[in-house]
Amino acid sequence: MIAAMMTAANLGARVTGWGFVVFTVGSIGWSTVGLTSGQTNLLATNIFLTLVNMVGIWRWLGRQRAYEEGAEAAAEKSETSPQSGLYNAAGLAGLPLMTDEGQKIGNVVDAMIACEDGRVRYFVVATGGVAGIDQEFRALDASAARLGKAELTLDIAHNRFEALPTIAADDWPAEPPEPATPRGE
Image (tube, rainbow, N blue to C red; front, side, top):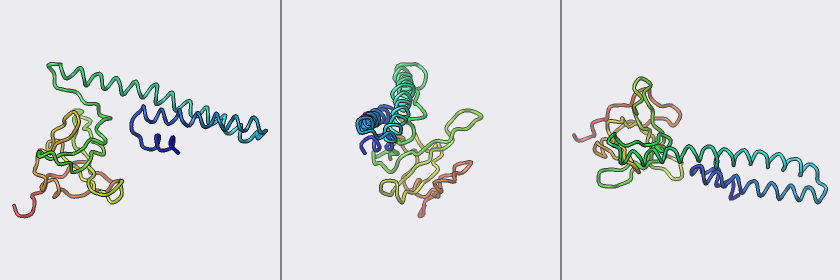
């Protein structure tokens, strides 16, 4: 159960990779039980699961971890570079959306990038709900926010963000809507 939570939570390459390590220990243990008790089906199944889990370890503690560390290294080096800072695109998902006053109002789910110039066109932001249930999604034009190292900060008033139309979790627009004028303005 611990390994399943570690892999399902998708908290980064290290946590996911160590989840596969826990899975591997379990499948080796069950293989031993199958071998010592003469249960060939249990043994065969867990030998296969051990191989699958080893692929998971290679992918998440090997290859993916290297990618994440490479992106972190580039971001750190860019802090002292005369060019603008770099941020790894995979790290956008989960970034908190903050107001100028420091209030967290949601999390970035993803970002849509324009093919012609490689710039972020808009962020998809989830707000409200509990544990992903009953969340509302909005497309926030990239010009309406500032990307920082650990957060995305609104460049428009919070009520203008709230006035943006909600979008379906599985049907995002080709273009972000213009920030709506809030009621009373």
